[in-house]
Image 1 (tube, rainbow, N blue to C red):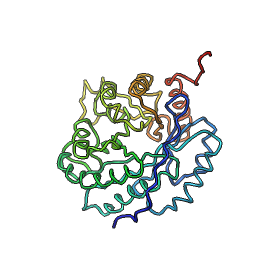
Image 2: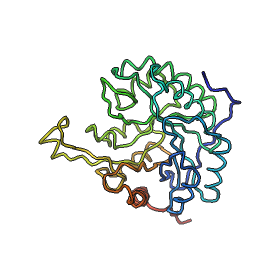
Image 3: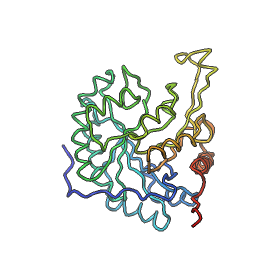
Image 4: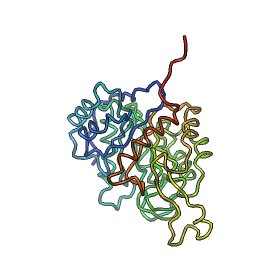
Length: 312
């Protein structure tokens, strides 16, 4: 059953900062305002609220008011909200919940002073990616129109969630061939990517030339990197028992984020790079926030440091 329609209200995009690109972090929605208040003093400039597999069960006016109050006077903003379930497989028990979660966030994202809803594109389970395109159009054509009516953009996260071209459980938006097919199926200007280099690198894709091509479609960036052990790849390949790649917090991986930010700036990107923590094999557990704050300061340096006005 579709979520009840609300009176259309244009979303207010997150205010740009003088540097043009904000550096922030992800916040699990259930941690809410208290978590934001606790980490805000570290210097995060934006927060991406992630609702896991479902955005149902929230009193959004009350919840958004609490979030906005936690940010008051700080200059920091909510950059995006996101839901990461599978809205494409009708056989899934959570199918209707996942679609409703997209509808709910599209209807309520303006309460956070934001215009961007992110998430997985979904997948018809264990079918080749091309066999999900018909269902993708059926689900996201109306969602894209609903979002456009409210001044909202949609961005698809590029994680493969352990799947490949032929089978998987979660997400078709995992590589450029799939992106081209998706944007041909639903050629809406308010559909784009929630991009990060990590997921491309663990597939042995060079993210830098990819970003040069796809930057105009990038609406939001996850601050997550990777380390690829090329010696392991050369000796053992990628299908054996030897691990050849690790997700990393920016500043500890292989990517030069100054290049990433340069490409984004040259493409006219204005938005946020929000650190996606909780993946680094070293900076985790009691070192989690140590790693995230190191990444925050590293990304700010790659951005060029603090804004300095030109002489009059």
